[in-house]
Image (cartoon, rainbow, N blue to C red; front, top):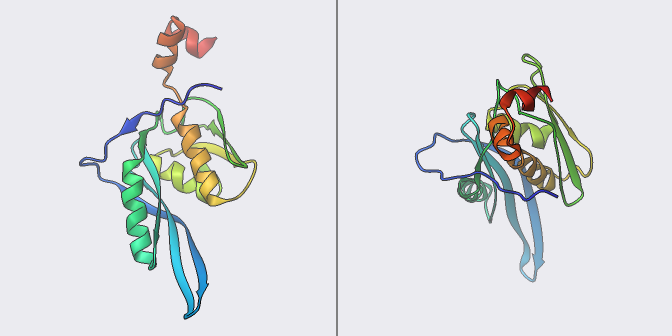
Length: 172
């Protein structure tokens, strides 16, 4: 498989929007009763090609979400977007979750399930066809979608790598 060279980005002064994908309540039974803790899976993005995901754990929901946002800001990547869609098809796998993302014509919208939709919309992709093929576990689906977006390459980058013209990249 190809080497994953994600285009890492620093949070800096980006205007990021947060989306909570999943909140999980965990119960631990102790001598004194039950102890609840929460984990929150959060996706952040500037809706202009930068997206990240993070996991936060705490005794309260709001604190878990805050920790998740901080973690997501540490895991930002740059996604190549071409006229509101992605440059090419991409398949990625994480655990038992497999995702397929395909470019779509203008006006199609984001055709994707819940966890994938949050990642794709946060990245600023407006037209895409996406399918979750394996497990529906939100953690693995988000990671697989993130991996697929990280493996996307710009057409100019492909042309340089192959030593061919841009025309040859698009027309074959």
